[in-house]
Amino acid sequence: MEIAVMKLAWIAALIGLSAANGANAQTLEYDCDTQAEHFSVLKAVQQGPSYKASGSISPRAIFPSKTYATIGVIDFEPDDKSWRARLGLTALVIKKREVVMATLEITRAGKSEEPVMLGSIEDFRMGGTYPISVTLGDSGGTATIGSNTVPIKLAAQGNINVSIICSGGEFLFTNLNIGG
Image: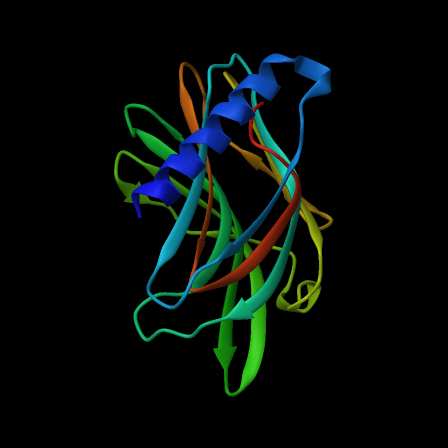
Protein backbone atom coordinates (compact mmCIF):
# COMPACT_ATOMS: atom_id res chain seq x y z
CA MET A 1 0.00 0.00 0.00
CA GLU A 2 2.79 2.44 0.89
CA ILE A 3 4.44 1.82 -2.50
CA ALA A 4 1.18 2.69 -4.31
CA VAL A 5 0.85 5.92 -2.30
CA MET A 6 4.49 6.80 -3.05
CA LYS A 7 3.90 6.18 -6.78
CA LEU A 8 0.83 8.44 -6.75
CA ALA A 9 2.77 11.15 -4.90
CA TRP A 10 5.56 10.86 -7.47
CA ILE A 11 3.07 11.14 -10.35
CA ALA A 12 1.42 14.15 -8.68
CA ALA A 13 4.85 15.78 -8.32
CA LEU A 14 5.53 15.19 -12.01
CA ILE A 15 2.17 16.73 -12.87
CA GLY A 16 3.11 19.78 -10.82
CA LEU A 17 6.44 20.05 -12.64
CA SER A 18 4.85 19.64 -16.06
CA ALA A 19 2.23 22.28 -15.21
CA ALA A 20 5.02 24.72 -14.39
CA ASN A 21 6.14 24.40 -18.00
CA GLY A 22 2.91 26.07 -19.18
CA ALA A 23 1.96 25.25 -22.76
CA ASN A 24 4.32 22.27 -22.79
CA ALA A 25 2.44 20.48 -20.00
CA GLN A 26 2.42 16.71 -20.33
CA THR A 27 -0.78 14.71 -20.39
CA LEU A 28 -1.31 11.38 -18.68
CA GLU A 29 -3.20 8.17 -19.23
CA TYR A 30 -4.73 6.85 -16.01
CA ASP A 31 -6.44 3.46 -16.03
CA CYS A 32 -8.38 3.83 -12.79
CA ASP A 33 -9.51 0.31 -11.89
CA THR A 34 -10.94 -0.48 -8.44
CA GLN A 35 -13.05 -3.30 -7.08
CA ALA A 36 -16.47 -2.84 -5.46
CA GLU A 37 -16.39 -0.76 -2.27
CA HIS A 38 -12.87 0.52 -2.98
CA PHE A 39 -11.63 3.74 -4.57
CA SER A 40 -8.50 5.19 -6.13
CA VAL A 41 -7.35 8.82 -6.24
CA LEU A 42 -4.80 10.71 -8.34
CA LYS A 43 -4.28 14.21 -6.91
CA ALA A 44 -2.53 17.47 -7.76
CA VAL A 45 -2.64 20.90 -6.12
CA GLN A 46 -3.20 23.97 -8.30
CA GLN A 47 -2.40 27.49 -7.07
CA GLY A 48 -4.45 29.62 -9.47
CA PRO A 49 -5.61 32.24 -10.23
CA SER A 50 -7.29 29.97 -12.79
CA TYR A 51 -7.81 26.25 -12.37
CA LYS A 52 -8.41 23.55 -14.97
CA ALA A 53 -8.51 19.79 -15.37
CA SER A 54 -9.28 18.15 -18.69
CA GLY A 55 -9.00 14.98 -20.72
CA SER A 56 -11.25 12.15 -21.84
CA ILE A 57 -13.10 9.57 -19.77
CA SER A 58 -14.19 6.09 -20.82
CA PRO A 59 -16.27 3.88 -18.51
CA ARG A 60 -14.99 0.31 -18.97
CA ALA A 61 -16.36 -1.94 -16.20
CA ILE A 62 -18.89 -1.92 -13.35
CA PHE A 63 -18.23 -3.90 -10.17
CA PRO A 64 -21.64 -3.65 -8.47
CA SER A 65 -21.99 -2.89 -4.78
CA LYS A 66 -25.08 -2.67 -2.60
CA THR A 67 -23.54 0.32 -0.81
CA TYR A 68 -21.69 2.47 -3.37
CA ALA A 69 -22.18 3.55 -6.98
CA THR A 70 -19.53 3.06 -9.65
CA ILE A 71 -18.04 6.51 -10.38
CA GLY A 72 -15.27 8.18 -12.35
CA VAL A 73 -14.92 11.91 -11.58
CA ILE A 74 -12.84 15.07 -11.59
CA ASP A 75 -13.03 16.63 -8.12
CA PHE A 76 -12.07 20.21 -7.15
CA GLU A 77 -11.83 21.16 -3.47
CA PRO A 78 -9.99 24.01 -1.67
CA ASP A 79 -7.67 23.34 1.25
CA ASP A 80 -10.28 24.61 3.73
CA LYS A 81 -12.88 22.14 2.34
CA SER A 82 -15.52 24.91 2.25
CA TRP A 83 -16.88 23.61 -1.07
CA ARG A 84 -16.48 20.84 -3.62
CA ALA A 85 -17.25 20.55 -7.34
CA ARG A 86 -17.36 17.01 -8.72
CA LEU A 87 -17.98 16.23 -12.41
CA GLY A 88 -18.11 12.75 -13.83
CA LEU A 89 -19.89 9.58 -14.78
CA THR A 90 -21.90 7.23 -12.61
CA ALA A 91 -22.43 3.70 -13.94
CA LEU A 92 -25.13 1.39 -12.62
CA VAL A 93 -26.71 -1.93 -13.52
CA ILE A 94 -30.51 -1.55 -13.54
CA LYS A 95 -32.58 -4.61 -14.49
CA LYS A 96 -29.49 -6.21 -16.06
CA ARG A 97 -28.88 -3.10 -18.20
CA GLU A 98 -25.76 -0.96 -17.84
CA VAL A 99 -26.73 2.68 -17.41
CA VAL A 100 -24.23 5.56 -17.50
CA MET A 101 -25.10 9.13 -16.55
CA ALA A 102 -23.14 12.36 -16.20
CA THR A 103 -23.56 14.66 -13.22
CA LEU A 104 -22.11 17.77 -11.64
CA GLU A 105 -22.30 17.70 -7.85
CA ILE A 106 -21.71 20.81 -5.74
CA THR A 107 -21.23 20.82 -1.96
CA ARG A 108 -21.08 24.09 0.01
CA ALA A 109 -20.30 24.22 3.73
CA GLY A 110 -20.89 20.47 3.99
CA LYS A 111 -24.34 20.58 2.35
CA SER A 112 -24.84 18.83 -0.98
CA GLU A 113 -26.90 20.62 -3.60
CA GLU A 114 -29.17 18.76 -6.01
CA PRO A 115 -26.92 17.11 -8.63
CA VAL A 116 -27.11 18.59 -12.14
CA MET A 117 -27.53 15.96 -14.84
CA LEU A 118 -25.61 16.70 -18.04
CA GLY A 119 -27.33 15.34 -21.13
CA SER A 120 -29.55 12.29 -20.98
CA ILE A 121 -28.86 8.71 -20.00
CA GLU A 122 -28.86 7.81 -23.70
CA ASP A 123 -25.89 10.18 -24.30
CA PHE A 124 -23.41 7.93 -22.49
CA ARG A 125 -22.57 4.22 -22.69
CA MET A 126 -20.02 1.75 -21.39
CA GLY A 127 -16.94 1.73 -23.63
CA GLY A 128 -17.63 5.20 -25.05
CA THR A 129 -15.03 7.95 -24.74
CA TYR A 130 -16.09 11.47 -23.75
CA PRO A 131 -14.23 14.76 -23.32
CA ILE A 132 -14.35 16.00 -19.73
CA SER A 133 -13.17 19.31 -18.26
CA VAL A 134 -13.66 21.57 -15.28
CA THR A 135 -12.49 25.19 -15.25
CA LEU A 136 -12.76 27.55 -12.30
CA GLY A 137 -11.61 31.02 -11.36
CA ASP A 138 -12.54 33.79 -8.95
CA SER A 139 -15.86 34.36 -10.76
CA GLY A 140 -16.88 30.73 -11.36
CA GLY A 141 -16.34 28.45 -14.32
CA THR A 142 -17.72 25.62 -16.42
CA ALA A 143 -18.13 21.85 -16.38
CA THR A 144 -18.12 19.94 -19.68
CA ILE A 145 -18.65 16.26 -20.35
CA GLY A 146 -19.43 14.90 -23.79
CA SER A 147 -21.16 17.72 -25.67
CA ASN A 148 -22.80 19.11 -22.52
CA THR A 149 -21.58 22.23 -20.68
CA VAL A 150 -23.02 23.85 -17.56
CA PRO A 151 -21.84 26.83 -15.48
CA ILE A 152 -20.27 26.36 -12.05
CA LYS A 153 -21.13 29.16 -9.64
CA LEU A 154 -18.21 28.84 -7.23
CA ALA A 155 -15.36 31.27 -6.63
CA ALA A 156 -12.00 29.50 -6.56
CA GLN A 157 -8.95 31.07 -4.90
CA GLY A 158 -5.79 29.86 -3.22
CA ASN A 159 -4.74 26.22 -3.31
CA ILE A 160 -7.25 23.91 -4.98
CA ASN A 161 -6.92 20.13 -4.71
CA VAL A 162 -7.72 18.57 -8.07
CA SER A 163 -8.37 14.84 -7.93
CA ILE A 164 -9.27 12.09 -10.36
CA ILE A 165 -11.32 9.54 -8.45
CA CYS A 166 -12.85 6.22 -9.41
CA SER A 167 -14.75 3.73 -7.32
CA GLY A 168 -16.22 0.29 -7.92
CA GLY A 169 -15.24 -0.05 -11.56
CA GLU A 170 -12.80 0.80 -14.30
CA PHE A 171 -12.55 4.20 -15.99
CA LEU A 172 -9.83 5.01 -18.49
CA PHE A 173 -8.77 8.67 -18.41
CA THR A 174 -6.70 9.76 -21.44
CA ASN A 175 -5.05 13.05 -22.45
CA LEU A 176 -5.42 13.91 -18.79
CA ASN A 177 -4.08 17.23 -17.51
CA ILE A 178 -4.73 17.99 -13.85
CA GLY A 179 -1.81 20.36 -13.42
CA GLY A 180 -3.61 23.52 -14.56
